[in-house]
Length: 184
Image 1: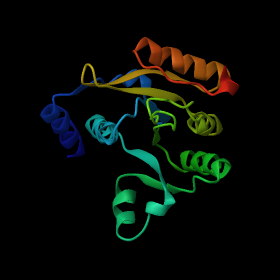
Image 2 (image 1 turned 135 degrees about the vertical axis):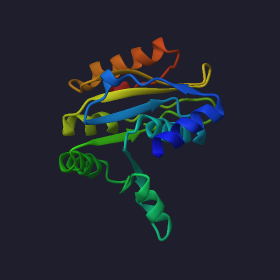
Image 3 (image 1 turned 60 degrees about the vertical axis):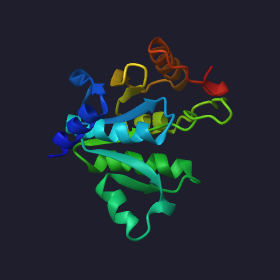
Image 4 (image 1 turned 90 degrees about the vertical axis):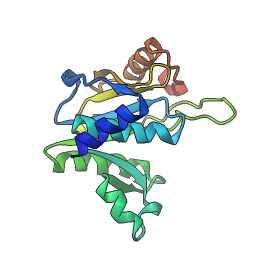
């Protein structure tokens, strides 16, 4: 049923998506750029439904109050304390360990800038994937072609090198992301 809903959403909105089954494994961290509006998140959610993938997303714990907490957990929301990033990495690695299949979707901070300025991306997604020993799948919400796309997959090894690979793959797709100074 969820596949049908996701596919119907894409059909009704005039968007398409690619499947790229060779990129998927039982466990992965998925990152997406650009994150320009809340519709990017809605399309991503519909895309994973259409693909039949159960996904999880970190959501600030302040939003987990009754009755909203029920809905957030139903859609794969995981409450996190964003003030303690080291604990988030450890906790997410433990989540990967506890599940046979686990896909964590992250829109790294730095994907939306104020006043046209894009800050450097945050690298928590990389640290989570490295700690959990899972690949990172690169997703793109391509507004120009109205398509949800997947650009590739990398296995985290060296932060600076991996971030440059990620930047290059997005650049080939026409998306510029700014890396932290420590990675260049």
